[in-house]
Length: 199
Ligand code: ITT
Image 1 (cartoon, rainbow, N blue to C red):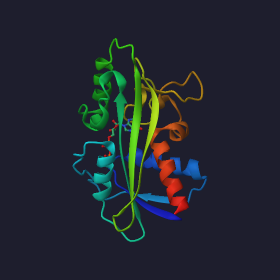
Image 2: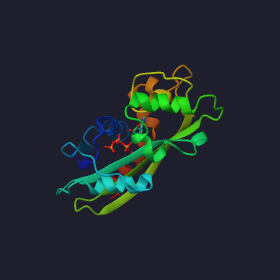
Image 3: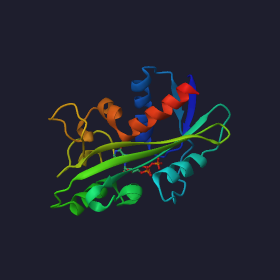
Image 4: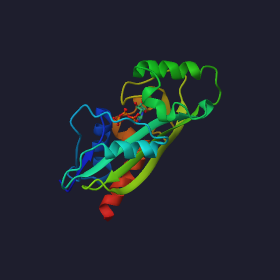
């Protein structure tokens, strides 16, 4: 592998997505090797922005010689809910199914369905020093009901503006390689990869 990254997450879906985004964006299956810290990885995310929380997670990883450290803090910001669940997306309800039900209930009858996913990423060097910070977004709207089983989190109720065809609406209806070209996480990671390629 050309580069090695310890990705500070406890979310296996995010790890899978980073691997696929890297493959798609670089066209090189050996460009980055991603590993994760020993579970449980659950630092206290008490920052007041996505950026702060991604730094908290990155700094919770023990630096290792020859390895970059990366962390992702992300969430769904709904316009009609003044940006909620936002920073609290992971803690909005106890299970993912309950989170979606709660969101659909809060949005019931609401005409303004605009929303965006946000992903903040922080890259540290192998001494734990900050190298680069960036964010990515994915604009779209909240569906009236669930559709699709791919992806994770709020994907079954998020309809991105950028899509391949009109049949496929939510992120959870898309094959992973489509989500992984247009998502907030893809948009953030592409900038991280470009930084690594240029440094
Ligand atoms: P780590 O902190 O361990 O990385 P997490 O799942 O707790 O994993 P976050 O604190 O960043 O991650 O919370 C993000 C939440 O936002 C996540 O639990 C989902 O509910 C939602 N989310 C983020 N990215 C998403 C995506 O690509 N698709 C659907 N939902 C997403």
